[in-house]
Structures are given as structure tokens and as C-alpha cells.
Image 1: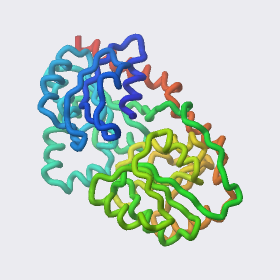
Image 2 (image 1 turned 45 degrees about the vertical axis):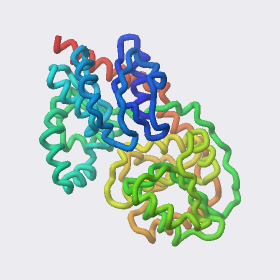
Image 3 (image 1 turned 90 degrees about the vertical axis):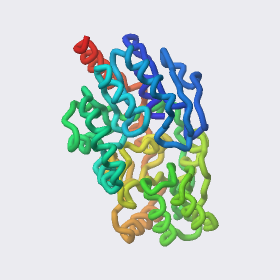
Length: 364
């Protein structure tokens, strides 16, 4: 979603001929077609399994190299997957100016975790990082991510938030203004990175009759299956599985707040958190770690920071349950979210294109 929106914004510029090269695998729908990327001037898709997070396929090699050879500038939406690594190598091979989006791959906790996996660390250090160091510049989703990247690379960094069509998200009026129950919603993969297992156990120790944790998201590993198995018969939990965006917004609208407990189980790999502006657009505040990018939500009166200690989290939840509803002014939530509407992205997109053009001309 974030890569698509960014490329769509790039393609809207009159000075850009955009060629998108990608795997046809899609986690949500299984596969995508060229019609799904019809905003680009040229689209080249290769087949790969939607179960393979690396998007591996031998077919990517000739496709990428052929297009990179004729490109003026190469941009990679991420690092450490098969096509993004090939893009960096291809840019070096054909001596093309190159930039990339880190997409959480250079967060400090992510690199610490990577070092614990000897073969993957060697691959990153000697086969990926040297090519990333050739980049002319890179972009990050937040200053939080940029702080992490600067510890690894000394490169110009553009801050380009994950813009999306915020204005199309419905603002949903809150219900139950006098309720003394608490209803939270989690949206995301059922994965350790999201911290949802630990939070669910804390929720179980806190929640009483009428308190509900709504969980939206797919599970494709042992962690997710164990989470569903342990809590699915408890009435204080509702598992919806994966839902489309429109349904997700309605479910968030039936809650008092969104909870994003990323980092609660150790590794912090959340470089942005797209569900945060989405929930705020609906008109709901967010419970979130203060280690993430959203460090001003509490001072803005539209969020609450999750403590590190379980008992302190229970105390926070108890306080929210007993508080008047809504927990934050819906209009304030919505106004903040509009900072991430794609309609306001012109200055960042212009800076990106100007930099790309400058480096492209310098190589001619």
C-alpha cells in the first residue's frame, strides 16, 4: 500500500516517466495484475509465490537488468528482498544513480536481530550493505527511522511519511459516551514484531465483563496460530481475521481506541505504523509505545503511551476504562490524521524528483 501510493504520487508528476518492476505476489489478494498499477507509464511484473516474503524468482533477473539498463535513475522501495537487492546490484552494474527507502530494514533492533542469524548477517553485511552505501540518497518514513539509519549510513535523507488517501476514510461518530467498559482494536499481522501476544495476556489479566479486544489481522506462522488458539474462546477477545479496509474502519469505529503494541515483545521493527493515521482519521485515539515514530500523540491529546511494565499497562487500561468517552476529541484525531493525506505530499514529492533529476543529470 505505501509503495503503491508513493509511486502513484511520483507518476502524477509531468516530469516523470515511471517504470514499475515488481513481483505479482500480494499478501492480501494473492496476486496483482498490470491493471492494478495502471498509473505507471510502464509496468513489468514477474511471477512469485505470495508465501515467499523475499519475492524470489529467477525471472526477476533479466526483467530488472533490462529495465535498469535503460533507466536514468533507479529507486528501490525497500531493502533485503530479492527484487530490491537486485535493483541495488543492477544500479551498480550499469552505473546508474540509485536511491532507496529503508522501510524499517535499518532500524537498530532489526539489525541486532539480524546479527543473531549468522548467515543472514553475513549476506547483509557483505552482499547488500556495500551496494546500499552507493545510494545517492534515501528516504525514511519518519525522523525516528532516520535517527536509526544515520547510525549505519552517512547519506542525505528525505523524510517522506507514508501518505495515503486519508480524506476517503470515514469519520465515525463515537457511541457509548457513558460506558464504563473498554473496547480496543488491534489491526496488523499476528506476529511477534507487533507485540500482540504479550498485550493479549495483559488484557486477559485486566479485562472484565463487557471489555473487548478486537483483533484484525491474518496469521501465517506458529506465533499467530498459538495466539488465536489461546484466546479465541474468551468472550473478551474477538478475532476477525483479515478484513478489507472499509470493514476495518467500521470495526475501529466501534471501539474506544486503537492499540499498536509494537516493541512490547522486544524487537522494534515498526518504522511508521500505517494503522495510526487510519484510526485517527476514523476519530479514535491510539495506544502506542513511545519508542515508535508517533512521539507527539500524547501531548496532542490524541494518544496514550504504553508503559513497559505489565502492571503499569493494567493501570493505564483501568484508567481508560473509567474515563469519560470518547477518550479523545474525534475532530482533533481527524485533523491530525490529515497531515498524512496524499493531497498534502506535493513538497516532499517535488524534493524527491528534484534530487533524482540532479543525480541523473550528473551521470550523463
